[in-house]
Amino acid sequence: SQPILEVKGLKKHFASKKGWFQPPSYVQAVNGIDLTVYEGETLSIVGESGCGKSTTGRCLLRLLEPTAGEVRYRGQDLTKLSGKEMRAMRSELQIVFQDPFATLNPKLTIRRILEEPLIAQKVPKEKRTQIIEETIQIVGLTLAHLDRYPHQFSGGQRQRIGIARAIMLRPQLIVADEPVSALDVSIQSQILNLLQDLQEQFGMTYIFISHDLGVVEHISDRVAVMYLGEIVELGRKEELFQSPLHPYTRALISAIPVTDPDEKKERIILQGDLPSPANPPSGCRFHPRCHACMDICKTEVPKETFIAGQMVRCHLYDEKKER
Ligand code: SF4
Ligand code: MG
Image 1 (cartoon, rainbow, N blue to C red):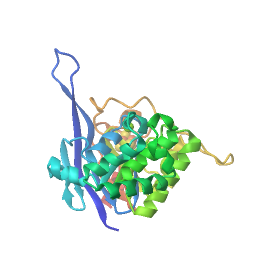
Image 2 (tube, helix red, strand yellow):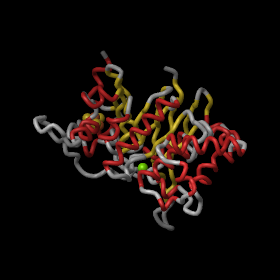
Image 3 (cartoon, rainbow, N blue to C red):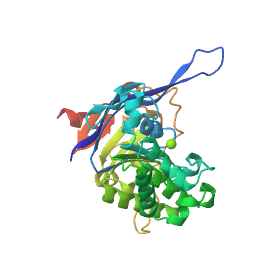
């Protein structure tokens, strides 16, 4: 299938002032991401909190301005669009947030909340009513819900409303940023199933951001693993879960609880905490926490290596590349 989004060299640096007497330092939240997302797939971005995955998702939709890099949507570089052109593009590119309540105006009825994106895109009144009533039912709620307020809904129902709002304009691409992380486990699978049904119905492409590999395994076609602002491994879900290459991916996968009691699994414990992106380690950014760390890892940044279609950035695979 065709690429829908092509990302090259995406960077996002934030200035962070430590104190009045010090010059500002720069936090490299996203440090050079290359990524191609294909039409109709679900590409997940996983990593620990603070690894830059949410910042990446926001930069892809220009909800945050990238510091550098290209984000081509169907060939057009979004970073070059004017504010007006970008607003017109909003009908095709949408985001679903982790906590829908924080993003739903508590003073508005659900009908008004869902109407906003349609008004912004100048959809006529009769058509708006029709789309609102159709969409509330598509996400598994009823017409009676339209005249209620956000506080009258449970967490799972609020996320259905958040999803309804995101699909009002029938977008092509949705960034879903931890859409089920705030929900009870029993509700999570309902929302994941809803997202999958909607993808089938509307042919949408998803970029699914999560810290939870269990959730990612359920929903993804491909998975990108992020560590300190960089993608360290990317591959098809099956390969990535069955034969992870990067030591960080291996550790994350080893930490997923096993459901089959006969299955033997060795847990790889990560050493230490995620270092500050303001002061990332030299060489391989993962080296202080890596059990396989070699001398070269402390000084040289590992480059992309492709092994059977799987991309990995790790010196363990250096010689395989030369052959
Ligand atoms: Fe570990 Fe070295 Fe690979 Fe980094 S490059 S993940 S430190 S083995
Ligand atoms: Mg986040």
